[in-house]
Length: 174
Ligand code: ABN
Image (cartoon, rainbow, N blue to C red; front, side, top):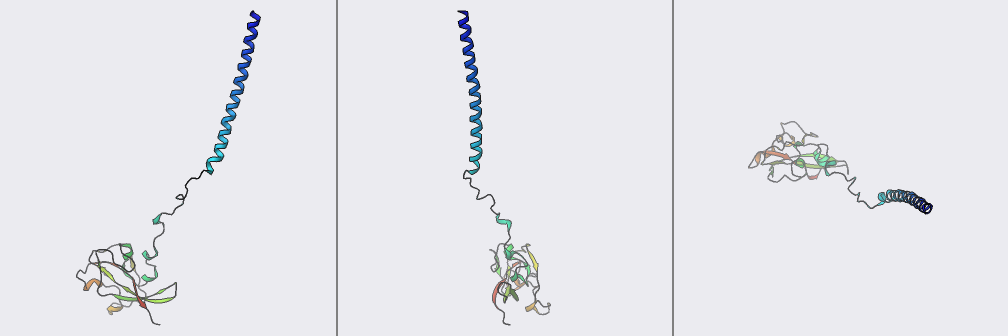
């Protein structure tokens, strides 16, 4: 009887060891398989990467906020494009000068010379941004009509100078 119980003990122990051995290996293999499949699949999931390399709006300034922009070839003042206006419109709360001076600038895209009217925008204090002093074809101050260093708000209700626009008003005859 003692021998039989010894034999049953031995058999049970061997069976338990075999099961534990198999279970351990199987679960390790299962975990390895899951890890490999997961590693292969996750990078192919349809992530939305459309914003990943999107340029920020401020990355590239508009060309007309530069003193080098062709229409600004003879401007003396603050660019209205930096002050809430556009290349040819005054910012809200200001009004265009009643008098102005007209320069001539060449558009590099079509090689045509255009007449550019540099209206000052009046009625608010100086904008203080994007100051340009370009003087292509400008002449000394004794001749007011061809001189740009003048506050053209002089004839407006308010002579407070804010900024200057560069409006195309015609084509220069050659
Ligand atoms: N036309 C621009 C400007 C305004 C005030 C003084 C000088 C120049």
